[in-house]
Image (tube, rainbow, N blue to C red; front, top):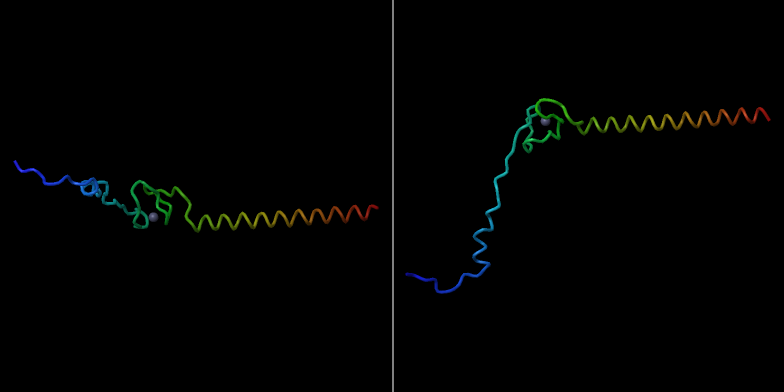
Length: 94
Ligand SMILES: [Zn+2]
């Protein structure tokens, strides 16, 4: 019976299993915009999942954020105007 001349080192032996965990990646296409994406995930481009829009797109988030900032600026301006008006009244009363 043939017998190996030398013991295989751990490194040589383990090289055999080094690629065992590597798998081919699976990709799916968005049903709305045909973009390539991972399966069971909402599309980042158009926010669709299973034919429905489930998350906001980047542009929608940007529009929402700018509108919120505009509102804050308007509120601040209105508050300052009301403060100035009340100060003017107090000065006129004295
Ligand atoms: Zn999409």
